Image (cartoon, rainbow, N blue to C red; front, top):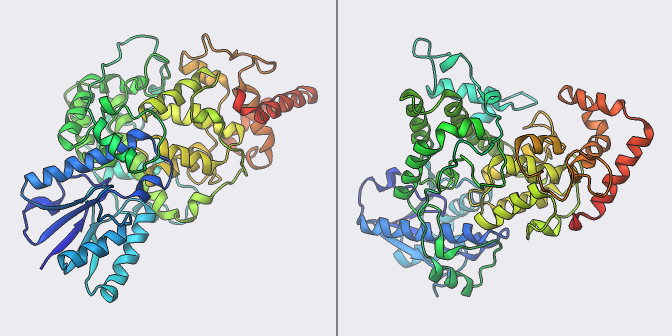
Length: 515
């Protein structure tokens, strides 16, 4: 009597109840297959780190006494299909059942559900799913909370989660927030001017050149720098916990003040770099939130920093997951603004004269990472202003970032960044001219373009594109109360100025590759 238990590449959680006891009748299955490495073009570090993490997890399970079947990419028995491999393993082991943790991505969930429904008739065995035991919320919890609402406001969801899970609440009144307010975001918008000192990189590099060469030999395609000789992302829970300790000790106290800061002197500023470990389930969100809360209780970090960090995990992360499961499959096709331009070539090279964009894309290619302001207000901002295809932007984001899995990346990109869902997720398009980028960062100094200029060959492209964006989409956006000031300022422009801005923007959009 043998049960197969499937473990996916983002389910590297040794604390799952599956592993509480060693069972000789259970075989844990992990597999590397080409479709999972090629459904979009992925960053080299993303592929390498997930595969290295899977192999480390399999070794750990074996060391703990569990039975494990690991199918490497170049294994002669590998059918290069999730379900094809399952069929073969059922036959090989004479399995009497197959179990799997609920996948977080719709395509895998659909694939495994279909396989499980057909398994009793085809193979004579049952197949069923169990919880991944990771998230605060169930898949449909956000949809139930927002039932009947036209717009899904994250702040409403976040406050409900704080109360439900007893996070940062007043000790004397468990329905009131600690410090008397729910959100300290207005306090967390400082530009970094060179002080306090940025934390040193606390990650431990690994040499995985042999593994990377084997993946390349097996036909894996990728982009970005593999850094296989110094791969520094966590490969297991022990390393992830060390990263959590280092973030709490060295970066959390300043995270709040500078979470929106842009600087050419750092690719991570005071950000935690924990999203990959969270999204592969090496870390549980409850322990991360709990550590941040204790830092506030111990007076190690200010409340604004702790609340801002917790909001990203208990609020935003759970919220976008709810959006994803409520609106798939069709969500990926949304394009409310009708944007269709292809990505400029410098999305793959970082070779653009816009200093802020060159830095954000350059570090994405080098490290498979950019922090949320770089993703939203630099790269995403430009993509939206220029009118790039939201589907093309989505595929690039899904491929380039090490923490990008579709359930969290898709709503962030199509909804928050590109406004492609027409305002379900965001109350307005998140766009800005060069003034925001100049205010929050230091890229404009020394840039080829002039951030104060709207017109002319050296005018920052963000400026003309910003005003042109609102002109092009006035029918949809001018009734939005959050954009009243934008349209008031547009109304003050004479016709000649408007035409000149439109001509400048049109020229920019026709030669995006050369900017």
